[in-house]
Image (cartoon, rainbow, N blue to C red; front, side, top):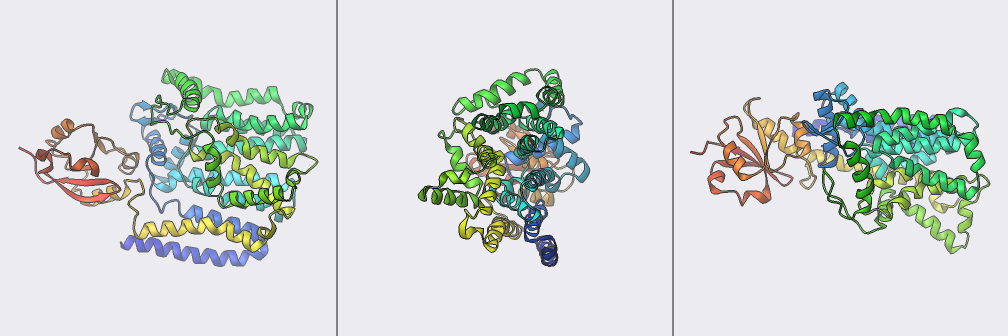
Length: 506
């Protein structure tokens, strides 16, 4: 408890000093940059104040930890000796680098997500600078950074931030290569595609191809796009960056390419409730659910977006929302719609699939604000309030977790902490019944064991080093009395009982 209050006091003190700092520099650097600094400060300092969440976040963090431990930097491992074929390794590489430098902890596991989000915001800002002055260029980055999904994912261990950064770099470079007449942007376009491919695979080509292709088709800009983009040399650059790993991975673990391209990138999206997933089960939703996910992902700005569109339609001025001689607003809209259009036809989706389109939404809202389409929402004070709304609520939730951990949060950190306090020495071992969560593996540095059935449990009771067990609460009542009589529950954590074996069965 003392450590909890010390962490809270440190956070409170740092927050006060940062508040004074922002008040002092905001007249110098501007309100927009000060607000963006607040958002990033809150996200950065909270990275290590809450535990890794099961199953997704802790899974990718544990794969990065295993990569560092085993020295296998080619193929991520879902378990020791078991390859993970679900995604390319770029995000895992970044997480593993941080863990190797900063140690095995939440901050190290999440740092690359934060930096990738910051990189996406920087690309959006640089793109805005080519269209407006410095004070107005902060609007789109602030809107994006304060949306629910980007803010959450800036501190979550996953692949989506890496994909989004690659797509953002590619689409921003696509636009700039058409307007700035600099060859470097054409190559950055293909580098962004390569980053996206190495983050999640060929889906990056689709999510970039939809807005770029539709914009070119609608605007009849075929000649300009052909002339300004180095298609041949750029494609070779993209392939040179991305293809070698796929070939090496297939050689190391044969069967990878078939599973990855046929299973992950065809059956997952065409077969409802796809059962071929090696690492879980398909998450089936009604077609079109991605639009509802977008609504939640872009909060509170999705409500602003819908209000602007509704008012424009009511005034019969909807066409004016995309008005412009260069097609910029159309490009932003297509950017936003790209994942929504594609995943509307997908049978298995999650809400993070909306993330790559949110920079386009932020850019479009910034354009509408400049033209007063946001009405009273264009007020600086209201915009500031919307910008700090989610970060403030998140900060309150993190502090509340420190005071009293919430039991429904799926993590094993509190159980592992209690086990570490109770164990008598390093020779003691914690064993999970039926399945060991990834967060338990991460926090015990891979030393936690697993028993698949009651028979294995009965045999394990004779091991003098295994005196702590973690059992799902729902399974405790069905445990044979011969086993229950030698176990004492010493803690309850997020649906699991921590059990202590006080003597050996005869």
